[in-house]
Length: 85
Image (cartoon, rainbow, N blue to C red; front, top):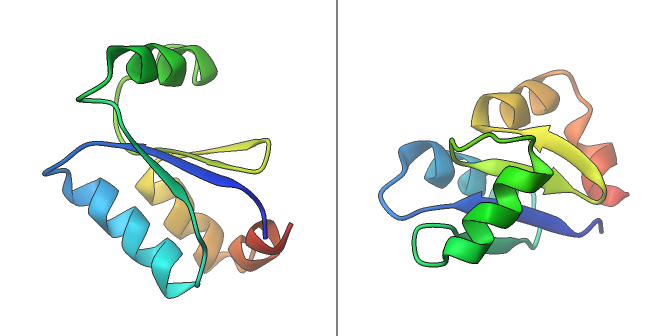
């Protein structure tokens, strides 16, 4: 399985929804709370060209985007192949 990183924060319904889909797919992921670690927020913003919204999702070396982007990949039938990567 591909290494997955989800930059998220507590109380974020979009973060919860994205993580729920990944769990449903049986995918293990690193959940990084950007609200408790300023260095992780800076890391996320550097990797996403300044985006501050959460979640921000990476599968392997590919930047996916947010929750809607993750669900769009699943609806298009492309998420499973990325997760297997």
